[in-house]
Length: 197
Length: 313
Image 1 (cartoon, rainbow over the protein chains, first blue to last red):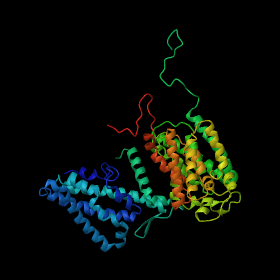
Image 2: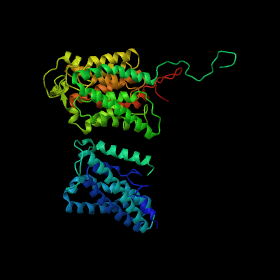
Image 3: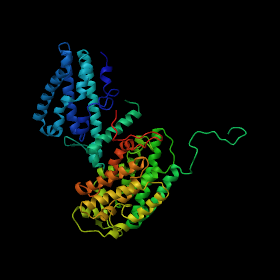
Image 4: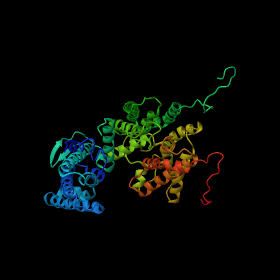
C-alpha cells in the first residue's frame, strides 16, 4: 500500500485534466461553483463506495459479466445519492439535472472499477478512488470558479459572495457551453506547458 | 555553379517571384485602408482608436504568443490584418477594452494555439469576433447612425423587424449604421478589386459567395441587391472568405466554399434568430475547408482521372 496510489489521481493522472475522462458532467455542470461542489460530493460518494464494493466482490464477479455487474453496483449507489440530494437539497437536484443519474455511466467511475478496483486489494482501492475524487473535485472546482467568475463577474456559493463583483461587464459566453471548452482547453494547454500532467 | 560553366545546380523551384508573405499581407492592409478610412469618416475618431488599439494588441499578442510557443516572431503583417479586420467588424461604439480582448483572443486562441500562421483552422479575426459577440451580446449589437451618432438599428436589423427599406445608394456608399468597416460596399470594392487585379485573391470566392446570396434571396422573394449590399457580406466575401490559410486551395473548392457560405448567410438571415450571419457562415465553412480540399484535389498530371460513372472494381 503506497501513498502514491492516492497522490497520482491529483495531478499526474488527474481524471479530468490528465486522463481527459468523464467530460460530459465536467462541461455541463461547471457553470457555477455551487454545482461543482454538489457534483464533487455525489461523485466522491459513488466512486469510493462502489469501487470498495467491487474490490470486495472481485473474486465472486464472473469475468464475462463484470461490466454489467459493475454498472449495477454503481447504479445502486447513484440511486442512493440521487434520493439523498433530492430529499435534502431540491435546488441542487434541479441544477444538476440529468447529470446526477448519468454518474452511473461516468467513465471515470467505471474506468477505475475495471482498471483498478477489480484487480487490487481493498485498502489500495480506497486510496485510489479517494485520490481520483480529489483530482476530479479539484478540476471541476477550478473550471467552475473560472467560468463563474469570468461569466458573471462574481462567485456566489450558497448565498455567500466568495468573490465580490469585480468585472463590470462579464463575458457571458463563459457560462455558455463554448466557455466550458475554452476554459478546459486553455487549462490543458497551460498544464501541458508547465509539464504538470 | 559547376566550374567553368554557367550552370547553376539548385533544387526546385527554379522560377522565383518577388512576391512574399509580407508583401501580400501589406498589400491587403493597403486594400483595407479605404474601408477603414470610410469607417473613421462615418463614425468619428473613436473608430480610429478602435482600429489602432486592435492592431496594436494583435501585434503584442502575436509577439507574446510566439514567444510562449518558442517560435521566432516575424513581422509578417498577418497580425496587422487580423487586428484590422477584427476592428472593422466591430460596432463603432465599443469600449476600447473590447478590441484588446478580441484581438488577443483572436491571435492567442484562434492562431497561436493551432501553431501560428498557416496552421489555424479558423479565420482568427472571426474567431475573435465570435468570442466577443458570444460574451458581450449587448455591446456587440449597439449601433449608431453615421455622422450624428444616434442609436439606431442596422439596415438588416430593421429588415428583420419587418421595417422599412433602406435606400440602395446609401448602402452602396456606406451612409448606414453598422460595423466600422462594413457599411460602405464601394470602399470595400475598391480594395477588393485592387487585390483581384494583383491576383492576390481569387475572384471566384467573392463572386460565388455574393452571387449565391443574391440569387437565393431573389428566389425567396427578397430584394437581392439589398441583401448583397447590407451587412458584412462584402467585407466577409472579399477579405475573410479569401484568407489563404482557412479557405480551399483550388478554384473549384473556392466556388464550393462561396456557395456554402452564401447558403448559410441566407439560412441565418431568413430563418435564424440573428439578422446577420456572415461571421458564422465563414467560420462554419472554414471547418469544411479540409474536406473540400480533399475532394477537389486536382488530377495528377499524366494520370487518368477518376470518373464517377466508371464503377470501381
